[in-house]
Length: 230
Image (cartoon, rainbow, N blue to C red; front, side, top):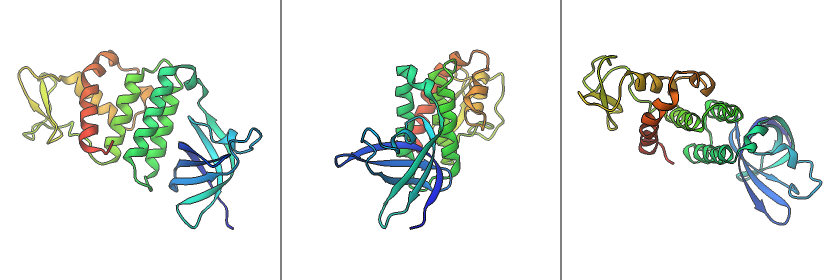
Protein backbone atom coordinates (compact mmCIF):
# COMPACT_ATOMS: atom_id res chain seq x y z
CA UNK A 1 0.00 0.00 0.00
CA UNK A 2 1.17 3.53 -0.77
CA UNK A 3 2.82 5.37 2.09
CA UNK A 4 2.50 9.10 2.71
CA UNK A 5 4.81 11.42 4.62
CA UNK A 6 3.88 14.62 6.43
CA UNK A 7 4.77 16.96 9.26
CA UNK A 8 2.29 16.69 12.11
CA UNK A 9 1.29 18.09 15.50
CA UNK A 10 -0.58 15.79 17.87
CA UNK A 11 -3.99 17.17 18.85
CA UNK A 12 -5.33 14.20 20.79
CA UNK A 13 -4.45 10.63 21.79
CA UNK A 14 -7.01 7.98 22.72
CA UNK A 15 -6.09 4.56 24.10
CA UNK A 16 -7.45 1.67 22.04
CA UNK A 17 -7.33 -1.99 22.98
CA UNK A 18 -4.44 -3.26 25.09
CA UNK A 19 -1.52 -1.44 23.47
CA UNK A 20 -2.75 0.73 20.61
CA UNK A 21 -3.67 4.40 20.46
CA UNK A 22 -5.71 6.49 18.02
CA UNK A 23 -4.13 9.89 17.42
CA UNK A 24 -5.54 13.00 15.78
CA UNK A 25 -2.81 14.89 13.94
CA UNK A 26 -2.83 18.41 12.49
CA UNK A 27 -0.79 18.61 9.29
CA UNK A 28 0.10 21.52 6.97
CA UNK A 29 -1.07 19.81 3.77
CA UNK A 30 -3.42 16.98 4.76
CA UNK A 31 -5.61 18.79 7.29
CA UNK A 32 -6.49 16.66 10.31
CA UNK A 33 -5.66 12.94 10.19
CA UNK A 34 -6.83 10.15 12.47
CA UNK A 35 -4.25 7.42 12.66
CA UNK A 36 -3.95 4.13 14.51
CA UNK A 37 -0.58 3.82 16.28
CA UNK A 38 -0.34 0.09 16.81
CA UNK A 39 1.55 -1.15 19.86
CA UNK A 40 2.55 2.38 20.82
CA UNK A 41 1.82 1.83 24.53
CA UNK A 42 4.28 -1.04 24.78
CA UNK A 43 7.58 -0.16 26.55
CA UNK A 44 9.80 -0.71 23.50
CA UNK A 45 7.53 0.83 20.87
CA UNK A 46 9.44 2.68 18.13
CA UNK A 47 6.44 4.94 17.49
CA UNK A 48 6.03 6.37 21.00
CA UNK A 49 8.96 8.79 20.95
CA UNK A 50 7.79 10.46 17.76
CA UNK A 51 4.28 11.41 18.83
CA UNK A 52 4.93 13.53 21.90
CA UNK A 53 2.66 16.46 22.71
CA UNK A 54 4.03 19.99 22.15
CA UNK A 55 6.10 18.75 19.22
CA UNK A 56 6.32 18.78 15.44
CA UNK A 57 6.90 15.27 14.08
CA UNK A 58 7.79 13.63 10.78
CA UNK A 59 5.14 10.96 10.19
CA UNK A 60 4.72 8.17 7.67
CA UNK A 61 1.25 6.66 7.33
CA UNK A 62 -1.06 4.56 5.20
CA UNK A 63 -4.55 5.77 4.43
CA UNK A 64 -7.35 3.57 5.71
CA UNK A 65 -10.51 2.50 3.91
CA UNK A 66 -12.50 4.41 6.51
CA UNK A 67 -11.67 7.48 8.58
CA UNK A 68 -8.67 5.99 10.37
CA UNK A 69 -5.31 5.35 8.72
CA UNK A 70 -2.28 3.55 10.12
CA UNK A 71 0.86 5.22 11.47
CA UNK A 72 3.94 3.46 10.10
CA UNK A 73 6.80 5.53 11.51
CA UNK A 74 7.32 8.69 13.57
CA UNK A 75 10.28 10.90 14.37
CA UNK A 76 10.45 14.13 16.38
CA UNK A 77 11.43 17.13 14.27
CA UNK A 78 11.01 19.82 16.95
CA UNK A 79 10.16 19.29 20.61
CA UNK A 80 9.32 22.29 22.80
CA UNK A 81 10.54 20.72 26.00
CA UNK A 82 10.62 23.84 28.17
CA UNK A 83 6.82 24.00 28.10
CA UNK A 84 6.54 21.03 30.46
CA UNK A 85 8.77 22.75 33.05
CA UNK A 86 5.85 24.97 34.08
CA UNK A 87 2.44 23.54 34.95
CA UNK A 88 0.64 26.73 33.96
CA UNK A 89 2.15 26.67 30.47
CA UNK A 90 1.39 22.96 30.14
CA UNK A 91 -2.27 23.61 30.93
CA UNK A 92 -2.39 26.54 28.50
CA UNK A 93 -0.81 24.34 25.83
CA UNK A 94 -3.54 21.73 26.37
CA UNK A 95 -6.18 24.45 26.22
CA UNK A 96 -4.88 25.82 22.90
CA UNK A 97 -4.70 22.36 21.33
CA UNK A 98 -8.27 21.56 22.38
CA UNK A 99 -9.47 24.98 21.23
CA UNK A 100 -8.00 24.57 17.76
CA UNK A 101 -9.28 21.01 17.46
CA UNK A 102 -12.83 22.11 18.30
CA UNK A 103 -12.71 25.24 16.14
CA UNK A 104 -11.56 23.52 12.93
CA UNK A 105 -13.11 21.07 10.51
CA UNK A 106 -11.26 18.05 9.11
CA UNK A 107 -9.47 20.04 6.40
CA UNK A 108 -8.18 23.26 7.98
CA UNK A 109 -5.81 25.34 5.90
CA UNK A 110 -2.06 25.39 6.44
CA UNK A 111 -2.20 28.61 8.48
CA UNK A 112 -3.73 26.74 11.42
CA UNK A 113 -0.71 24.44 11.60
CA UNK A 114 1.64 27.42 11.55
CA UNK A 115 -0.40 29.22 14.21
CA UNK A 116 -0.18 26.29 16.61
CA UNK A 117 3.54 25.96 15.93
CA UNK A 118 4.04 29.66 16.73
CA UNK A 119 2.06 29.16 19.95
CA UNK A 120 4.38 26.32 21.00
CA UNK A 121 7.41 28.51 20.25
CA UNK A 122 5.97 31.26 22.47
CA UNK A 123 5.07 28.85 25.27
CA UNK A 124 8.63 27.55 25.16
CA UNK A 125 9.91 31.07 25.94
CA UNK A 126 8.92 31.64 29.56
CA UNK A 127 9.47 35.39 29.33
CA UNK A 128 6.38 35.66 27.10
CA UNK A 129 3.29 35.91 29.28
CA UNK A 130 0.55 33.30 29.18
CA UNK A 131 -2.04 36.09 28.90
CA UNK A 132 -0.43 37.34 25.69
CA UNK A 133 -0.20 33.85 24.17
CA UNK A 134 -3.85 33.08 24.95
CA UNK A 135 -5.12 36.41 23.58
CA UNK A 136 -2.95 36.16 20.46
CA UNK A 137 -4.04 32.58 19.74
CA UNK A 138 -7.71 33.46 20.15
CA UNK A 139 -7.31 36.45 17.83
CA UNK A 140 -5.60 34.28 15.22
CA UNK A 141 -8.46 31.75 15.26
CA UNK A 142 -10.91 34.60 14.72
CA UNK A 143 -8.79 36.00 11.90
CA UNK A 144 -8.40 32.65 10.15
CA UNK A 145 -12.17 32.15 10.29
CA UNK A 146 -12.63 35.55 8.53
CA UNK A 147 -14.31 37.21 11.50
CA UNK A 148 -11.66 39.84 12.28
CA UNK A 149 -13.00 43.06 13.82
CA UNK A 150 -12.91 46.36 11.98
CA UNK A 151 -9.97 48.15 13.57
CA UNK A 152 -9.77 51.04 11.12
CA UNK A 153 -13.18 52.73 11.12
CA UNK A 154 -15.97 53.04 13.70
CA UNK A 155 -19.59 51.90 13.44
CA UNK A 156 -20.37 55.13 11.58
CA UNK A 157 -17.66 54.53 9.00
CA UNK A 158 -15.37 57.24 10.37
CA UNK A 159 -11.65 56.65 10.84
CA UNK A 160 -10.69 55.75 14.42
CA UNK A 161 -9.03 58.71 16.14
CA UNK A 162 -6.11 58.57 18.57
CA UNK A 163 -7.58 61.17 20.94
CA UNK A 164 -11.02 59.57 21.34
CA UNK A 165 -12.36 56.73 23.46
CA UNK A 166 -14.65 53.97 22.26
CA UNK A 167 -16.86 51.09 23.29
CA UNK A 168 -17.06 47.92 21.21
CA UNK A 169 -20.15 46.76 19.33
CA UNK A 170 -19.90 42.98 19.15
CA UNK A 171 -22.73 42.69 16.61
CA UNK A 172 -20.94 44.95 14.13
CA UNK A 173 -17.43 43.89 15.24
CA UNK A 174 -16.43 47.55 15.34
CA UNK A 175 -15.82 50.34 17.82
CA UNK A 176 -18.42 53.02 18.53
CA UNK A 177 -17.43 56.48 19.82
CA UNK A 178 -18.19 57.24 23.45
CA UNK A 179 -17.00 60.10 25.66
CA UNK A 180 -16.30 57.67 28.50
CA UNK A 181 -15.49 54.62 26.41
CA UNK A 182 -13.52 51.70 27.79
CA UNK A 183 -11.00 51.61 24.95
CA UNK A 184 -8.42 54.14 23.79
CA UNK A 185 -5.70 54.29 21.14
CA UNK A 186 -3.32 51.93 22.98
CA UNK A 187 -5.95 49.22 23.20
CA UNK A 188 -6.79 49.50 19.51
CA UNK A 189 -3.13 49.37 18.48
CA UNK A 190 -2.63 46.23 20.57
CA UNK A 191 -5.67 44.61 18.97
CA UNK A 192 -4.25 45.38 15.55
CA UNK A 193 -1.08 43.54 16.51
CA UNK A 194 -2.96 40.55 17.93
CA UNK A 195 -4.93 40.20 14.69
CA UNK A 196 -1.87 40.71 12.47
CA UNK A 197 0.67 38.15 11.28
CA UNK A 198 3.14 39.23 13.98
CA UNK A 199 4.05 36.37 16.38
CA UNK A 200 3.78 36.76 20.18
CA UNK A 201 7.55 37.29 20.42
CA UNK A 202 7.19 40.61 18.57
CA UNK A 203 4.09 41.76 20.44
CA UNK A 204 5.69 41.04 23.82
CA UNK A 205 8.07 43.97 23.19
CA UNK A 206 5.22 46.53 23.22
CA UNK A 207 5.44 48.90 26.17
CA UNK A 208 2.85 48.20 28.91
CA UNK A 209 1.58 45.17 26.99
CA UNK A 210 0.45 43.37 30.17
CA UNK A 211 -1.64 46.35 31.29
CA UNK A 212 -3.22 46.70 27.85
CA UNK A 213 -4.02 42.99 27.77
CA UNK A 214 -5.96 43.22 31.03
CA UNK A 215 -8.48 45.43 29.25
CA UNK A 216 -8.68 43.74 25.85
CA UNK A 217 -8.33 40.03 26.69
CA UNK A 218 -11.99 39.75 27.85
CA UNK A 219 -13.05 41.47 24.61
CA UNK A 220 -11.08 39.00 22.48
CA UNK A 221 -12.62 36.14 24.43
CA UNK A 222 -16.11 37.52 23.75
CA UNK A 223 -15.33 37.75 20.04
CA UNK A 224 -14.11 34.16 20.06
CA UNK A 225 -17.17 32.70 21.76
CA UNK A 226 -19.49 34.81 19.60
CA UNK A 227 -18.10 33.80 16.22
CA UNK A 228 -16.10 30.56 16.64
CA UNK A 229 -17.40 27.15 17.69
CA UNK A 230 -15.60 26.54 20.97
